[in-house]
Image (cartoon, rainbow, N blue to C red; front, top):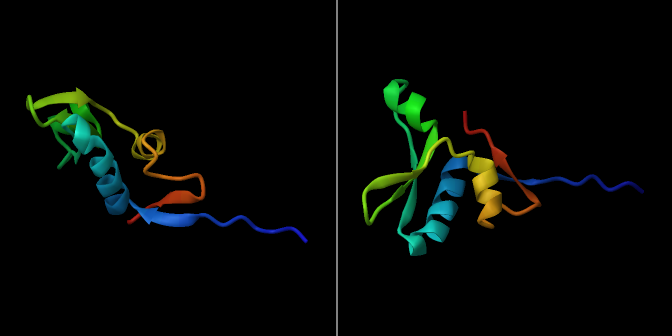
Amino acid sequence: MATEQRKVPVSRRALIGRINRRLKDDDLCLKVTRGEGRARQELGEYYVINVRYGCVTWANVDLESEGREHGALREWEELRDDE
């Protein structure tokens, strides 16, 4: 019998919350860029800021890979597209 491996869906909002809980100890916070203007061109859809110094630490963050890197998204989970 072949078993089908199904992955548990995780919403973008939930993943952002998980990542932010992991980044909090380092004074970092994942943000979502609003609108379609200049900020999105420079920062990408997601970016990380240092809340202590108020500066952008990482731009053009890939949400799924960032989640996997910080252990917020496990191998049996997948990012579900909310739209």
